[in-house]
Length: 294
View 1 (cartoon, rainbow, N blue to C red):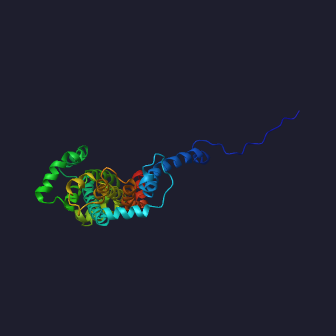
View 2: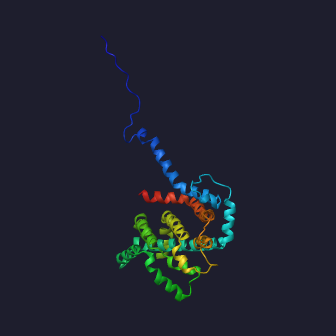
View 3: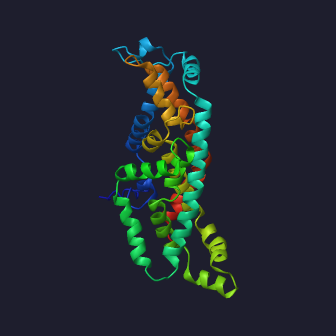
């Protein structure tokens, strides 16, 4: 009686580490879609309310379909507050603070990370410890200082206290300390480069990916800041966009129009969306540069 020999199984077995195993499953895409949908829903809901009238915004049954009143609500925002001048002030403050924070953080990060000087560790520890102090604790003293200088009610009072960031110094110190080889700095010195030229030709090019991330986060934090500008900018003609939008609530009294308020909020984040689109490639490059070590 002859035995039957079955042909060998040529199908690829899904073993850990194989290409078949590493392919994403359907549930992976389902979870990813749920996360993206949950993240985008507040923005979509804000647009739905901003495109309706005040009656639909207060309806007990949530409205999920956009209306056609967004442009009229946006016009009400522009008529109620000095929208364009406030946006210009926010651009001036955010760009100035971002450039200053990136430059001084990179400069300090290069000094703390690659230069050996007396008291470096103690000074760096002090900078890091300031991160544990809430900025609200120093608001009273800082406000009195701005008042003594006569800066209250001006953009200088908003810009000056945040020209340097302790987090930026810490972030750039960690990045440059691991990225720049010491031999490269010594080679620049042998070629006759001074300290600042070495920083400009060696540290700055190496810091571009991290500087892009720091610039993006700093711009967003400055653009959306409300607490400190609200304290020092009391002049209605000198406002940042966030403090100007708060006047939409104040002008409405006890009957705020949520459609108009959310329309103004959406208009205020348009520059941030544009910035994310333009800086997306640099952001991904900076994250990958920090994750992959040579």
